[in-house]
Structures are given as C-alpha cells and as structure tokens.
Amino acid sequence: MSTSLDLDRLMEAFLEDGPAVLTDRVSEAIRDDVERTEQRAVVGPWRTPLMSRYAIAAAIVTIALLGGVAIYAALLQPPNVGPPAESPAPDPSELGAMPAELQYAFLGPAKPIEGFDDYQIDRGDLYYEGTLLAFGIGNQAAFYSIPSITADGDLRLTSGVDGACANGDEGTYPWSLSPGGTILTIEPGTDDCAARAQAVPGTYQRAACKNPDNSCLGELEAGVYASHFIEPRPLGPWAARHGAMTYTVPSGWASYSDWPNLYGLTPLSQYQAFDPDQEDCYDCAGTRDTVSILGQPGAATEDCQEESTVPGVGFGRQDLVDWLTTHPGLSATGVEDWTLGGLMATSLVIEAADDWTGTCDPENPFVAVPVFFGQEGDYHLALNVGDRWHVTLIDLGDGNTVAVVVDTANQEDLDSFVDEATPIIESFAFPAP
Image 1 (cartoon, rainbow, N blue to C red):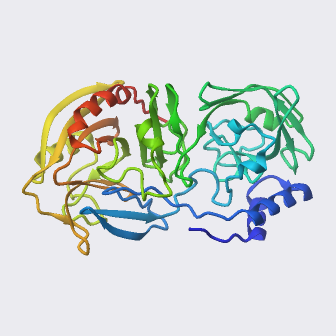
Image 2: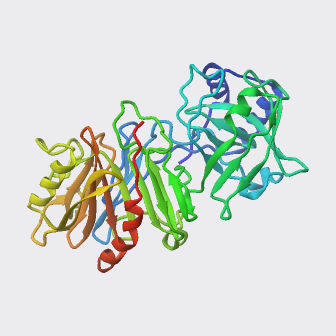
C-alpha cells in the first residue's frame, strides 16, 4: 500500500518539531527525493494464528483460508517504529558514492545530546531520507547530513541545516564494520558541529529486515545483540528502548521482527529462503522454525474474541502457568521451573487436545485453542489442533512477564529445535529502564 505525501505539510511539521531551519540546498534535496520516491504506509507484522494490531489504526484487511489455517493481515501504524513513514529507503544507485555496506539503516541506543534537552530521545539511529543521512532521536531527526567518504576512507558528514549544526558544518569520522557487516563502529573524529560530534560516535546494529516496514536486524553474525523496539515492561505510552532485551547467538541465525511487544528469531537458512514478495508473512503458523518473544502475554478467551483476556487470570508467570496446565483444550507436559539470569522462569510443552472443537473466525472457522492475547491487544496466538509449542514464561517482577514461544514447521522437529534454541534463550536478559 502506498500513500501520497503533502511535501509542504511535511516540511512545516519538521520546522515546528525540530530545532533546525532547512536551507534552500537541503529543501531542494528533500523535495527531489520525495517527488521521485513512492511513499509507504507502515504495515505491521502478521502471523497465523498470531494477529498483531498495536491498538492504533488497526484494521483487518485480509482473511483467507489456506490449508485449513486462517491468515490474518493487520494494517496498522505503530507509534514511532523505525524511521518516519515519509523516509523512503534510497535506491542504491542514488548512493553510489557511499560504500554498499553503509547503505542501510543502523540502530543505536539513546544518548544525551547538548541542545536537545526538551526533545524525546529514545534512540540514536542512522538512516537515509532519500540521499540525506539522518540521525534520529525518536520520532524525528536531530540532524540531516550529506554523507560522503574522504580520500582517507573516513565518513564525511556535511550539514545543510541551520540550527544545531550550521550550514556547511563538516565532520569526519573513522569507521569500521564487523566481518559480516552487521555491527558499525564510528569513532570520535573532528566536527565543526559540537552536537553532532557528541551524537554520532558509537556502536550501531545494521537493520536489514526483509519486511520493508520493520527495522529488524535480519542476518546476524555470532555475537551479542540488543533489541531496539520491543518493550517487555508496560511503562505507559510506548517508546523505543534500545537494549530492553539482549541475547547471544551463534552463527546461523537471523532476527525476523522487532515490534513494540514482539521480537522474533529464526534459523538463517530459512530466513534467507524467504521471499516477502511471494509470501504473506514470515511466521505463519507451521511454516518455519521460530522463537517468538512476547511482551506481557495474557490468557486468551476460548471464544477467540479480540477484546480482552480471561477474567480472573492475571499476567504473572505463575498465573499463566496455572492457567495453561488446567486449560481444557491443552495438554501440558514437561513443566519445569528454573532461573534465567536471576529471573524465575517456567518451561513447558503445550499441545492442543485432540477432542478440542473450539474455532476461531466464525466466517472461515478453523479449529484452534486460543492461548495468548497481548495485554494491549496487539497480538493473538492460537494453537491449532495437531500442533504443539515449547513455551517459557519469564518473570520480570512487578507482575511483568515475557513468553518465549518455540514453534516449528514440522512438529517432529520441535524437540531438536528446542535443544538448538535453548542456549540462546538462556542468554536472554531484560535490563530494567
């Protein structure tokens, strides 16, 4: 889906929200890029039977029946997820002067920036708006720079904006990439603009998601990574918090999604074979091996209605364990309590009972047991009869819980995939704000 953009409205909003004034040079650069690039509306994750709504602007746009499994597609616009919707990715030919390995968005943590005390700073990202390189601090860019590479191979950033950086301010920064290009390190350099010199140096993670409307990391090298958008603790209005979850993976893994209440990991071989232009979703039930991390799961009602959770069942770990192990539509085995980084956790395998007859979607019914419903109504998981999941419920304290759901394309492979995924799950950490 595409949407037109009122350029004057965009530029007025930029001038109202940001501290900068566009010069003619940058105004024309933005105008040229906007006029030649089709704008995208933001479309969120969808899964069968996971339905993601994100509570605002959510509407069901597709309900199809495929092999007895209903596919839900949710049209939504999550708040402040990734670069603004009016920031299209540039055509690689437009950035010919920039090394190909730098032609991505790179995600980093929030950091204090002099002169921006009155602005929401919940991240520190580098991404392109057309051929301009933006440094994003939240739902707006703090700086726009014209990027280039010096003869010595340093990153040169030239300002075309009056404000925090004066027109023509230039900075140069040494930079390096990890062997696989997934981690960008920018060293302190020299810059006419003090605020930019404070903001830009640091370590960033490459966002190379196959979903163009999500800023997941995509292919991962072996190492430690941080989430960027998921917030497993309900802290009021959602804002990105880099590192709300961290984890360690060996080689051969990918991150396929990073949304405010959902993070996804998957084997790299399966992710590489995925063609988003030919398939509706990555994690449609029973199609791939996935590890899904759900923030604040609640007990889904048996009628599969997306309105609320089961009355009387809390959101705490033990509340959910008790509910899963006594649910009439589920068989729970292998219940085990353990600790994960000092946090109490419970793991179990759940399977839909053979005699369960409850259905979801009255118009195109399919037999499934509703399991998890997001506390904010932003996802809905149901387990099809004949399927089973490995679930780990992690107690973050203060009534906050994370559910880790391990699913496989072939149910016979679940146990072996759990063995493969367990060291990664054991590495999960959920730092408090």
